[in-house]
Length: 209
Image (cartoon, rainbow, N blue to C red):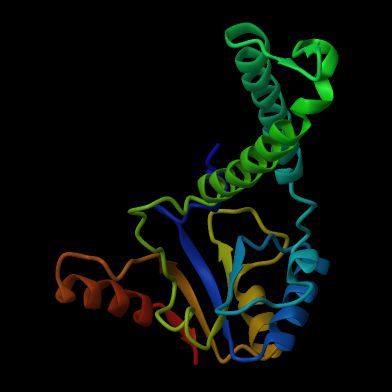
């Protein structure tokens, strides 16, 4: 279920850093028009239309939600039927509580449909995005969760332009910094010294400031 294509492990990136969301959006559109494959963008706040600019299609989460809802409906009907017809049949209003009074099961079916859909969507969303409890963050820049916006391009991907041409486009589009061969790191390393080594290596990869 986990989308492994979003993992940053064992990869090196060309990273363009922006401070303006409009410039970031325009840079994404320019790069994609030239056939450059963008790995992902990292922003500390939502950037409207960025998903469309990156070419993301509509999520399939709605299909999962529908399946969870159907499971909830079936569970609700099974619960009500087993309790009121099989396990403890009752006569209500002079009529036996059986399958012919299905309408009395509707509240239970409705509630379980909503419950299964809500919890199912939350679980699928967090699992799909690898956001389960205990996950350590992957960062390409310590300020990407503060006030900087990043475009990451996987160096192992075959591109229509050379790395130098991509870096030049990023600078022309308003990037305040461009780095090559950047590795992901997390701030939960065992020692601050190890973290500084990784960040220092990334800073040493800067090609344009």
